[in-house]
Length: 509
Image (cartoon, rainbow, N blue to C red):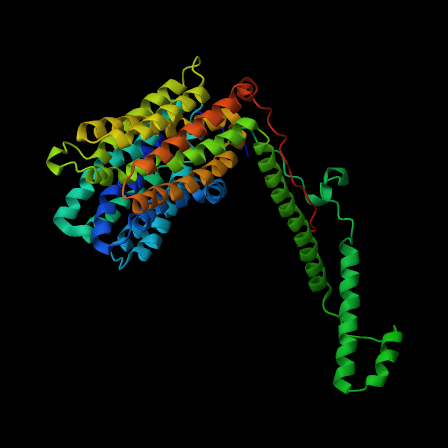
């Protein structure tokens, strides 16, 4: 079934609106987990590296499961996946309020909430790309600002809720707010199929053999029935021999083909043969689908830009994600007084990320701007800002660096755009799922690595030098891979021939 041409408006703006609030509600708490991180350090008394696993899992697990998330969205649609994921996020947040130790949080907050966020992110991005083509950069920029606005608001909201209701009450209230995702998901109407009349369905028995991809080279239906007759006859002979205990007559019974036995009704044997024949064809069809999926994956990695893109996103998330989780603790470690805090550093990162996503998404729609080079520029500038964090010893400098990091973290809004230009819209779900898996791996490893560096050296200096180096390395690798081949990658890729699996099955009537 082919989808209608992207309307670039109409109900698509409703999709943008509800996708914005979906990301706002699901990512608000996990991205602002730095506020809860300090509370968990005090509550459980664990090391910074171990405690950082909670927030990193919440952001990384969903991305690690992106191939599965993409498969779920492709199989069930964005609306059912969004509603189901809303229950996961809300339930995980509420369950975390009863956590007796840090290990329980690994499951409730890290895995349950993280997997729900991953499903929601894939659903909102996929349905937005379906509704928009010419304005895709703007649409993706708008919906991706939802998580950034959520970071900005939830950073202050969670701090206030902790003061009034404690850590447990804060998580219960935030979980209740996440239930509004269900209402957003109900409005995600799928894009209707094209108005072209469907071709007339051809009965399997009328289909010429030359159009059948899977020609059964083994037994046909009549031969299957004969085999069942023979096997049933042999079974009855063996039963009679065992029942009588006459072992000497066994050879005579096998040699005598005229022995009569009670046959089952012909219709029953025919149905069994039909089901056997059908299962063989279905198994071959599924095997061919898996084979095609593996072949498409290998073809994707043969694209140099795509291969460099997955390395860049892995290194970017290893180095670029820790500031949003640890910046509050960085300020406390730098002896910045609480009265100097005009605004939480996490809130600054959140609001500037929203601005960056929107502006970068608008820039991506300009024809004269090379989106891939724009993405590379964000990586290089962000890497330099990360290397400058050890030199920041006051609130003003930390706030300025937080603003720079937040703005260029907004390159998430153009990442689906870059992926689409690299592999084509037909392979977007497949390629994006693979890339998000590596992004999740980076998200899961980054904060614990930075925390372990602190536990080892009692300072964040070496940790952020390492983070900046990772982001810079990813940017330069992507730049070198894109320089000679971007023009070929930017061309419209030919649409693959649709794979149709036709097979004959006998009628059950």
